[in-house]
Length: 228
Length: 225
Image (cartoon, rainbow over all chains, first blue to last red; front, top):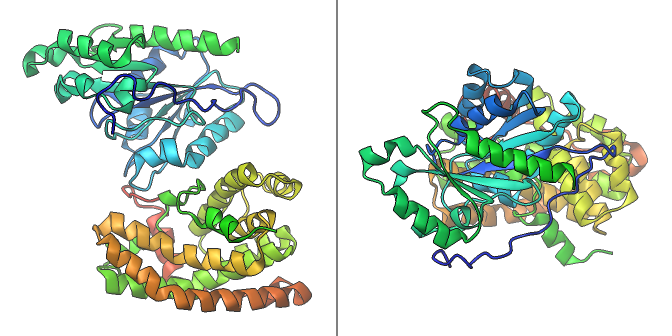
């Protein structure tokens, strides 16, 4: 394993799936959100939906590990109409469903597009997993890896494919840092060492508009996708 | 013609056709205490092999021989009483077809996707895929028979923490029976060429069907079926 160098995974790309659907219309941009259990993936998805739903036609696919709780949280919070949220079952292996065998997630994405008509953006939320979980480029056009300060401020230093290669690293729950003794400066330095020029966002969803930097990044991804 | 290696590609558990999220009824059987250890897993797999496995193998062999897939899909429906299992079979069929069209692109598989936009039954797609890969009815029957036991065995390793060596031992001990089931299925498929799908095996296990229907309504579960 090469978990400790930023250059361990310099090029992971197979190409993302083509931009057109079978009927010739343009498919939605697909952004994957992965990361450990409890780091705030679902909360980030909910906040992104609230921030972006007025400007983009959106849908969400959740990959719950053994329940429908993530999907139900999003439904309960009414971040999107229920027909825009769907759950995929992963057979106890969340990383398999987003990387090694993406067929169920692709089905879910395509069913949403068939049912709802053309969409701009689909967020695919992974089940909570470990630091090696990444999305296949056949499923996600770009991926966000969400960790939190309470999970230990050594996670950026430990690296791993999620931290090292995700298109955006989000360090969540910064409001908890003083309470759990996490050093945000150290996390930022370690993340920069691991990721080189790839962006990192420190976020707290407790404050007003805490998701704004990630939402801005998603807008950039969409703008780049729209002209591809 | 496809050789043994093409068969291995299709039989590989890493072939991305969605099976990893399904337990072949093992989750319900573990919860009910019908699978507790290697011995009861073996009993379960033997039962599934000679019922659902035999039926699937017949359908797959018939599709590999080139029987009409619409007729075979209707025959599969008739042999699958539980709506939850029909839904799972169609979903898995559609997922398999996606992988198959990428691996062995051909007009026949494209036509199957067009004819069944919501998915055809998985054994029918499996047989059509074997055909596209240049494999024969015996190969397709072996694939279906083996899948009918390998799925529950793998799932039980995850569900019960069963020793994976014991699970593989179960599969190895059942291999001879799986060969025999595949042989019966292939013979029936050849008969179905002349007599129609009515000649195909129609073995089923009521408990598998009932448990699958109940499982589909569980609020908390690890596997889709």
